[in-house]
Image (cartoon, rainbow, N blue to C red; front, top):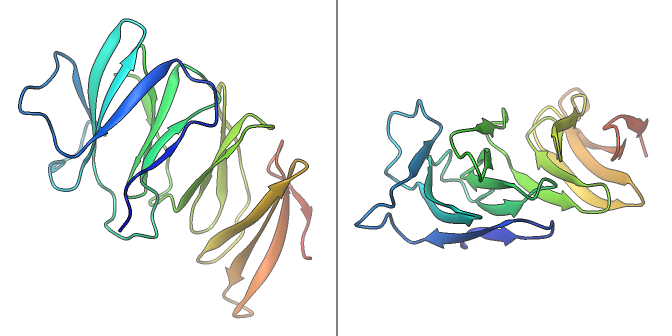
Length: 188
């Protein structure tokens, strides 16, 4: 299994250091994501975050140990926000107020993709795609697959991909408008 992805495609007002393990001496501010987690120690993503006047340790519970799930650090369209993903569990955290965060509903997130030209961060799940913009969730696509969405590429404001359809037992292509998440063509 490779290490965490670090994608700093968007301008950001913070620095992040992925730690191999939790430090012996914790910083004064330590946040565990999600708050309700029962066991976070085993496999958690530990990230030391520095923003203007703020230093905190983010401990992100591991979702799945499957290498097909996303893990890493992403800049977001909002320069004050950081996206941390641990085994497919995705957390968007306000770096100035780390107690404020959003956990993406997909369990798991299989891929995270920065669309800089559209100012969106895409979260790819098993059945659909969710887009996150500067002010939060921008859109969520309709169901694109019964089990497994693959993004083939993004160009000219268009997201192209495929999803497996149970009824026909085959991959079916889709095209989405990156601004709205709506299909621009049902089949290719």
